[in-house]
Length: 145
Image (tube, rainbow, N blue to C red; front, top):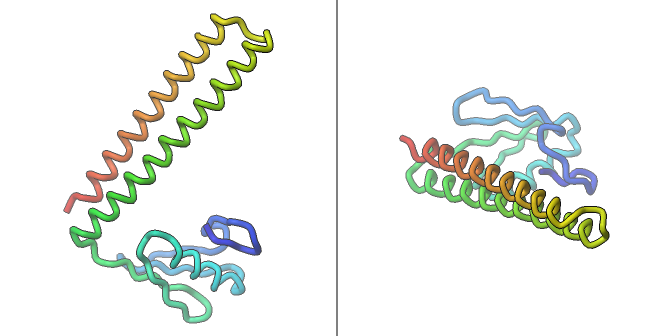
């Protein structure tokens, strides 16, 4: 995300990203005034990338994947997965709170509330399982030489 005129904006909405070589990314902003903002966002990200600017485009040399770098990327993937699991659990809590409020207000019977909470728990478990499968596959892919 790039802070663009005070608004967090995804990078693909501000620039074209091309891959002219296997380990090189070229970011060409549509608005040259956003070049510094994009550079700042890339440096601030937790990816360990350092862009070089020529005034019109940013070139990002991707480092060779050493074993340490692979472990670091796997750690980042696990951290992102945990953030997503937390987000799913927060949604579950909000829905359960809304169901309890509906039950308290008399809009929902106790049995219907319990059934709905059970369905919410099943969906939560299913999505957390999907997150776990995705992160395991990504970790295997990253650590594969």
